[in-house]
Amino acid sequence: MVMKKKLLILLIGILPFIESFKYSPMKNAEGAFVYQHDKGEDWLMLKDNYMIHTSFNKSAKQFHFSRGGIYQLDGQNLKCRVEFDTRDSKKVGQTETHQFQLSEQSIQVANIEYKRADDGSAPLAGYYRISGRRQGDQINEMPLAARKTIKLLTANKFQWAAINTSTGEFFGTGGGSYTFENGKYTEHIEFFSRDASRVGASLQFSDTLNGKQWIHSGLSSKGDPIYEIWTRESITY
Image (tube, rainbow, N blue to C red; front, side):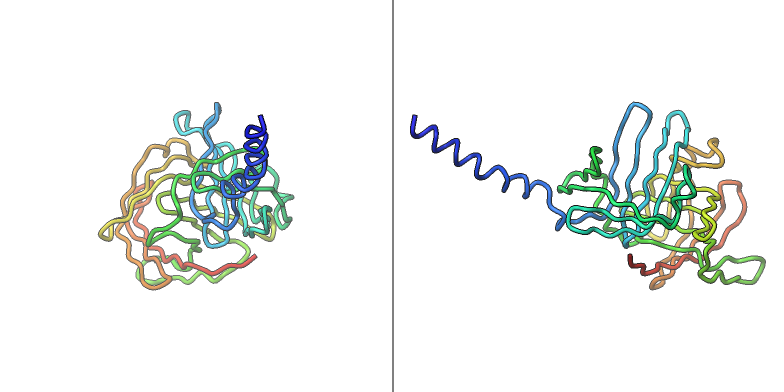
């Protein structure tokens, strides 16, 4: 009986340690995380201090919503300064705070647990802004402004969004999975806010990395030739 009591006391004493080991904000919080539910799935992408949360149903080709912004992990709180929100543009510029718990295989935000899909580590992974586009024989530079098109890539997922952080306007977004091998960048579209018919398409491009510049060329989903320069930018909360 005495031995059982000692064992019970020992277990009670180590439980908090086990929980703190299971969920720790010191582990890698970058990457893509997925929450499957009866209406589809939610993605949570975090890389280079930028996060995007998107909900969609690939099989039904339905886009539900997307929101994103610059984030910071503070203890067990995730703070995000919102740059776009398709459901409520009034939230743009505001700061949201959510409790989170992180393990090797998942991240829990509020009461929702997202399973890790990748660790955010890949040559192309990062936060990018389109900074130049070829028109004819000329490259037109696109300096940083409130209206911008951004792209976030983890190890195997991507999403772009066209937004205006000053007015709260949202112009469109799309994303899915990607591969990048031997200079060939291939996108597999899983959601598209403006044209559901593009879901399921795969597009291949000839891309190169030159320092912080990502040269992106090929044909768009409409078949139009494109040549774009995306710059990986450093952002802080």
